[in-house]
Length: 259
Image (cartoon, rainbow, N blue to C red; front, side, top):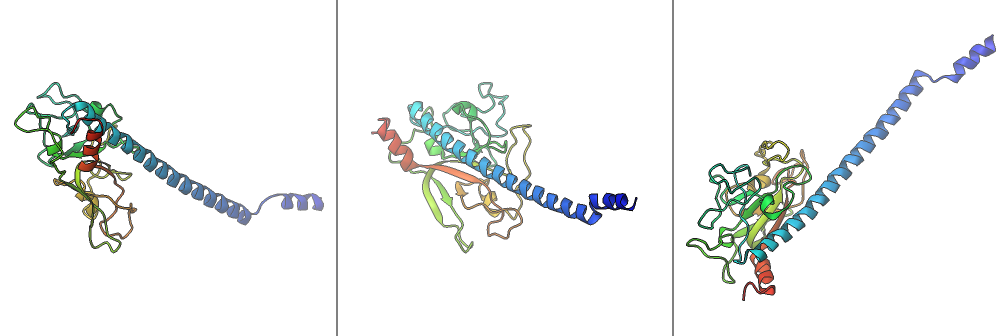
């Protein structure tokens, strides 16, 4: 009888042993989840960067086929249909009858990518609409008093970055004619493609992300920094692509649209 009782005691786990096993399992699961989350974020950024390359090609293709040549206008406001102009459907560029782009009073010529006009998907990998800015001198179709761009025109946009010491924002590119960017994982300042609602506002500390949404032609492109890190310019996860006037002019000359 004693031997049977002894065997029963020896065949089970003590509470301490069970606790150790549970701790080990918890650590392994936490490590797996953390690694999986990082891989998902990396994949989404890579997918979005690939989409931005496609978008850039589509914008150049629009300029080739426009015959002017000229670049597409943004879709402004919430990128929805325009009650005052039935021809403007969701995702379509907002162009005035005189051939110029409709300027949103709040952000000038910064709006959203006209995905319907370009035949592209509207949003990044986080389901936020792509932002799009165009230089009005390169988007006029010449219908009204304005004119389409030529070799003498210079782009007015600028791309800056953050210096290693964080104190300055040196110039990366000038003569920029179009900028496309995603609001990244945090989606601050963006517009959801799922429900059409605005994403959370950009915090005041995110200086560089704010710079990408104000009413001027200057944009920031730099290494991302996570929330909670002390970084000059604040948290940043925007991905910014641009087209310079030299690039688009060279392409137009190659296909014989510009002399």
